[in-house]
Length: 221
Image (tube, rainbow, N blue to C red):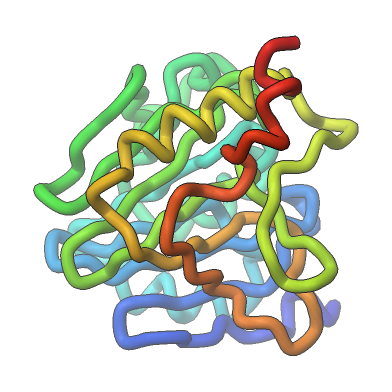
């Protein structure tokens, strides 16, 4: 058993779990939101015994799996073996999972509940998306749109897997304007890690990181 599969999910709040990084998903972090309309698994965690036991305990619930980008697709199969839930994916990346009957593609936005909405936010990949949980949750699950920096803050990062950097910055600006009435909230990144000792939930009073004037030149490339 590897350290990854032996690691345990951690409950941060009554409505929120965080999973250890998943090497099958480029070391990304998965989250589990316990919503009144049913749990939402944001990206597949590593399929270790503790993660699978937690998910199995919720298998009978009316839950959903969200793929925030194509980088998490490789870890989906072992999770679907436990959870017979619909899989939400932005339509530009649905073709990467042919023959998966659980797929539910969406285009630009999709309301899952009155206080739960998906937004297409391309840039990290063509079909990257985020989930905003309002109401009592007040969390933005941003996938790889914002990644942890060494000091614990979040910022957009142009990396080897980035699909389109200017579109990523434009996605951030558009999303920030869409969330104008949602501040303050906490941001849950799907990035590979957080700084040692840092809170994995990063408070944000608005606007989103990466939307200030210092980023404007990148938007116009």
